[in-house]
Amino acid sequence: MFTGLIREMGSVKSFGGNRLSLKVAYKAKLGDSIAINGTCLSVVSIESDGFTVELSPETLKHIATEKLTGNVHIEPAMMMGDRFEGHIVQGHIDTIGTVTSITNNGNSYDVIISIDPEFIPLIPPKGSIAIDGVSLTVNEVMKDAFRLTIIPITMRETLFGTYKKGTRVNIETDMFARYMRHILTTSRQKDLSWNDVEHISALY
Image (cartoon, rainbow, N blue to C red):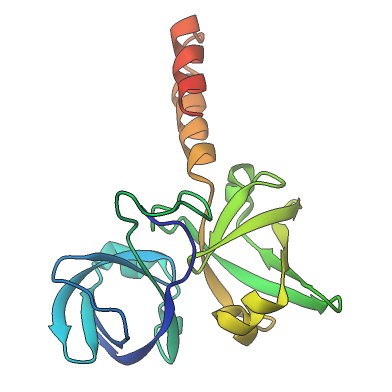
């Protein structure tokens, strides 16, 4: 589990096949789960200046691999007893979105990201979303896009400062919204019982 708060910016040393080698200050251990641009990956090798993670064919199909170059977001998995901030992030990318506009409002930036309409029901207004692993709040939801408001420090300290129109981003929707949709979809074959309602309520 992650929180969507980026620990540091890592530098890609190499990316080929299913292996990604990174230069980072964070001292990982073999087998650690670490989110790279929001994708949960396992450390398979330790080097003096960083580590290497492995990407499965399934992962490669669902993420923006063109961004595995230059700098990337790094967040180690949350440990028991850590302070919980951000929101619950699993590191499971749902889909790829595309930046359609960035508007400078003086003390913030409005960023609009287009997405397959199939995923819009999983993006509630004022709900949480992870963009390339960054925990953010959705300010507005449209038919096939949503709007984020990004503060200057996020622009400076994350990849958001490099985004432009056409940039593709990894998107992880709200975990609870995903679970709710699954429960409601699979329950359509029968009437909901009070036990079903109590189970849904317990998820929150």
